Image: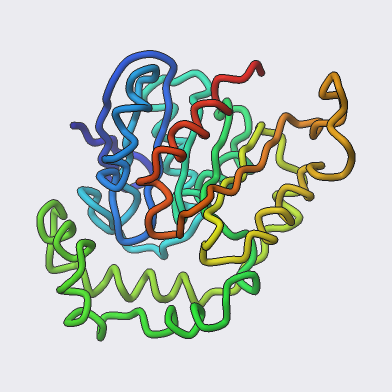
Length: 263
């Protein structure tokens, strides 16, 4: 369990296992502990670095927005701090978005990327979900006290009293319009786009992202000559939702199968 001073933030991380380095990036209102169900599988063959992103888990917040690009720069700085050579990255939800920005902004620092349950434009999310997200702010603290996210924050955060502030910042991030279509189209890091078959966005959105990466444009061919030129891939995990996909045994199995492919 360690901290790294990067970009003005005291970034918490912990390491498990040995082997090729693999960074795991958690979802919003969570921490690295979210990967508890899949961590043993990843750590069997990798040196796993669990990171608590800005304002989450054991990483205290700082005076800046919760922004995908800023958090991606934090992870890039952590890679330099640890002297890692192009580690693979697996991100979920918020962490998936951060992973995509890391690969877009710092392609030379990443080996392979698994972006799980990460939409790339706000308009892809179901309308009723966007309405729910509009209610996320400090006023929701009393309701959130009955959730595992609140319990986790109170247990590990350096300043447990900052939970309302985190809700405000997450809410602001959710209300901010975004569309990373053009940035993703130019992605150079081999990327697995993974989603649940009942996610926060329709499965068709993950197919849309895959198409931006030259996927699904032709028959793959007997010799795999029709596969996407950048080594990208797509996986929709059956019987899962946004809220349990990383607990499914299929999550680690699918991610590891992609990460073990030849570059």
